[in-house]
Each structure stands twice: as structure tokens, then as C-alpha cells.
Image (cartoon, rainbow, N blue to C red; front, top):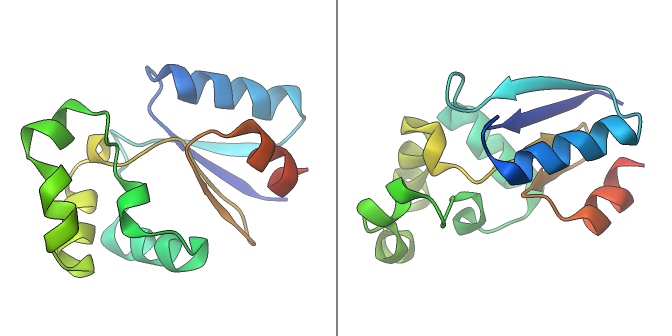
Length: 118
């Protein structure tokens, strides 16, 4: 299974997720979100494939999210406008993100990863 692992290397959750992938023998392509932020088109594809609400793709605990008052904006802006915001800065995007042929995982929930990646 080809897996894309999108992460921020300094993020402790990303470190735990990466360790889990390695320990479970899952081969992955590592991509730093700060240096190589997902494009609007990628994000739209992941959003559609995931079946999640767009707000689940936002890093709600991030400084940038709070500074820009995104809590209220997420409720009022269109999906297109929110995708533009996500594509503008990798630090706005929740991580890690795992992309496989059949699923998109946002954030690290071990039970969910166990089910989808093994």
C-alpha cells in the first residue's frame, strides 16, 4: 500500500504517528507540511475522499488559527474560501494527514489507523 504521510516534524503527535507507522511496518513517503503545503486541488480531493467536514482539516490548536480568528470564519466562509486559507499556509492544516488509495486520515487516532492501515 502506498502511503503519503504529511507532517510537521516538530509536532509531537506527528512524531508519535510516524513511530506508529514505522513500528507497524508501513512504508510511507514523508512530506513536510511547512515546506510543501498541500495545494488547494489536493486539499479539495482529500476533503471529498475523506467524507469529513472542512473544519476537521483546520489545526484548531495552532497559533495562526487563533490569531486569524478562524473559529468564527470556519462557520461563515464558503468551502472554496476555506480551501484557499488552508492552501495558503501549512501551519493552518491539521496534521498528520495520511493519504492512501482508499482513505484519508486527519490527525492521529491509533484505533482508526489500525483499522484503515493494516
